[in-house]
Length: 170
Image 1 (cartoon, one colour):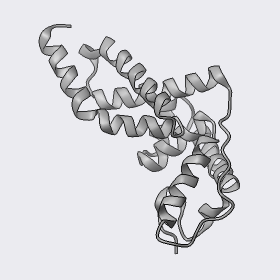
Image 2 (cartoon, rainbow, N blue to C red):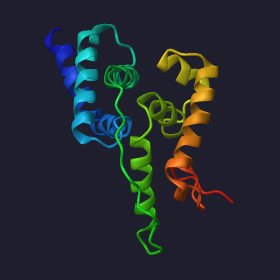
Image 3 (cartoon, rainbow, N blue to C red):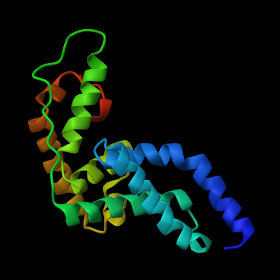
């Protein structure tokens, strides 16, 4: 890599790291250290292919999704956290729901988390999610359905007037 390409890569990392770190944090179920490792691994893969990468952010995001699923397959462990018995009805209700959501997401498999994040946080259509994860559209649909059902089971408080990922229901 020549000096100009290295400068371009450094500028990309500097500009996009905060957003990429937020995504890594979501993908790892709220584990800050794992998120840092995930982003670092994705950036390491990206720098190796930097000259041929047309859309760097998309490349890094896809590398993160695939790396997280790969790590999940290798570990096959589930993080268990107990959500509070009930939410307190005061000004912190939204924060309580965020905590419950993070804990519930952390209890999903990496693939389930990735599908939900791609569909609802990244707002990608099912076909694009299938391409990113290397599976069929039917797999994306069934995984989305099972993941949302699992979230509802893990955190019944999310059934309140707030839909999953903060959308308000009528």
